[in-house]
Image (cartoon, rainbow over all chains, first blue to last red; front, side):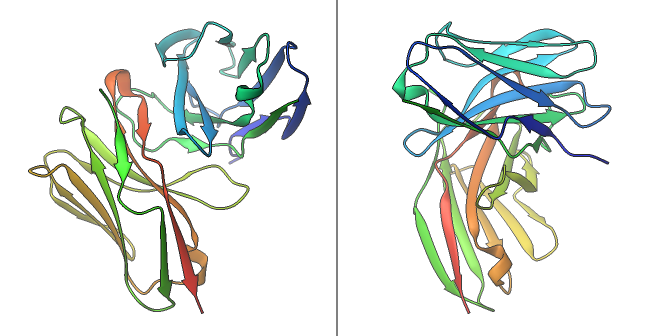
Length: 114
Length: 111
């Protein structure tokens, strides 16, 4: 069974640009969550999608958005990039999400904003 | 507010010894508390969880203890091996089921 796949693995962008990251969950999983990981703030929840609907949202500005497709694949977008957006962005999938503790994480996308 | 914190940022143990990683949490309403392991270059990997109405749960070489009185969670790893070297995160299920992670403890196992 394939794991969670995130693309690309590494990305370098310039301030002001926008970026789109992709996540393919484990087959059959309907919940996809996104997390930002930085040395200073640790792992912080961005949002969760379930059946193409955003079901939960963290405390990030509106520049961070996402969506989920009918095949459960998810994308997150960051517009008007800032230096502080440099981080490892992790995607996690689970069967149902809510009430589930065993989320399966991808390897992440390392975003560097210069 | 919601927060989960760790007492120690780094822990160094000798191979074969037992390791204890600690965590403090603040949200008493969480249903589950979980431990994740993150190796370099990889995403976090689920280790073990414990429901809030339990105080102890054992897995393979790992035991999680939950003390709700002092809002403390710990992960015990028996006979620590070099492959256990990683960053360990405690997490709790927050509102809507999202995971709230602590800052992490880096475990280093000396051969």
